[in-house]
Structure formats: C-alpha cells, structure tokens
Image (tube, rainbow, N blue to C red; front, top):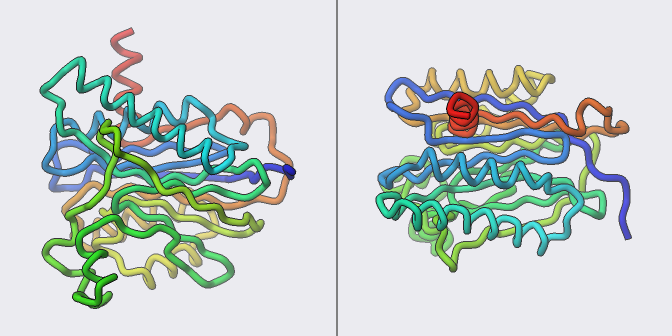
Length: 268
C-alpha cells in the first residue's frame, strides 16, 4: 500500500576549506531526495569517486522505492566506480562514503548509509543521530573500550571500516523512517562533525528556519572552529504541501559533483 510521497525542501553548502587543495565532498539536493559523499582520504581520486556516485544516484530519481530497491540502486552506482577503475587502473583504491535520504514508496523516508558521513533528524527540539559511523572508533565504543566523549577526539577517529569502492562486497545500510511535516534532516561530511559538537549543531538548526541559511551557518561554524577538511552540509525540511511543478525536475549539485558537472559542460 502506498501513500503520498514525502516532499523535501533541501539546501546544501560545500566548502573546500583553507587546508585542502581539492574538494573531495560531493552532494545533491532535490525534492525527492538528497545525499552527501566524501571521497576517502589517502586514496586516489576521492573527488571522482564521490562525484561519480552522486551523479549516478541523482540521475536515477530514486523516489518511491522500497528499501531493497534503494540498496540495489546504490550497488549499481558502486559498480560505476569499478568501471572507472577498469578503464584507468591508476584509480584503483578510490572510494567514498555515502549518506542519502530519499522519499519512500509508502510515504516515509529511506536513509542509505556507509562510512562516517552522518545523518541527523531534528524533530521538535530533539536532535538524534540517525546513522551509525562505520569506523574503527565506533567499533571501540560499541565494545566499551572507548567512551563516547573520548571518541570525538580519538587520534584514529577518521579510520573507516566501510565505504563504496566498486568492490563486490560493498553495500549501504538502508533504514526506513516515518516522515512528519516539520522534521528537519541534516546530512554532512565529517568536516562538520569532527569540529562542531552535536549540541551546537542542534542550536544552529533551531536558530535558522530557512534550510539555505542553516547550511551556510553550519559550514561557517565548522571553518571558524579550525576545520582542516572539506566540509559539506545538507539540510532537508519535510513539507506537508503538494509538490510544485517547478520542484519536480530540479536537482542541484555541490562540491566535487558540481565541479565535475561543469567540467563536462566545458568539454562537451
């Protein structure tokens, strides 16, 4: 049984930061979904990995899917990364995290996630992390070896245990959520969460009612906090109105995804 599709008003902001030569973050926003991907540091072509994945998923307009269908769509996009490597072996090892929110067939929302980019839901004035980090430090927290407080500053907090690299074993965890008008979702790369605590993120989301202003404020605070990474933030507000015609085909790209899109136009 299906119901009215969830409608999102989404905005994003991506900044290369003052300490990086390239932006390896990529994001897209649409009325039916949004996502952020962060090219894995230390590997080759992280910007290509994140941009290629985001473009493939956005092109599919993945609204109205069942959880297994969304998981299959992510796997298909992951195979595109393998195709890039097969064409150019120097790209072997490239990988990206991925966190995406999509309108589901039953009227709810689907969250797809792998890596240490994050998703949060603000309902009322309560902020909760909806994704679980695929990271070494999170595994240590789960085993009681490291406390949640110490995890935020742990020297190995950026070592991830899952990503999308084109490998056969790669997969995203897909979780279903109900959609309530007024809910606010935040998707972000670790350039935000490594430098800005959750309570400050919550305060920013409550302070700025417009999604576009909220993402700009989050990025600005991360940079002011001394962020040494790229930082990308997506905010999605769940609406209770009928989808306007002009929103149905509007998809926007940010970070590496936007840069590679422009490169494609210039070379066409």
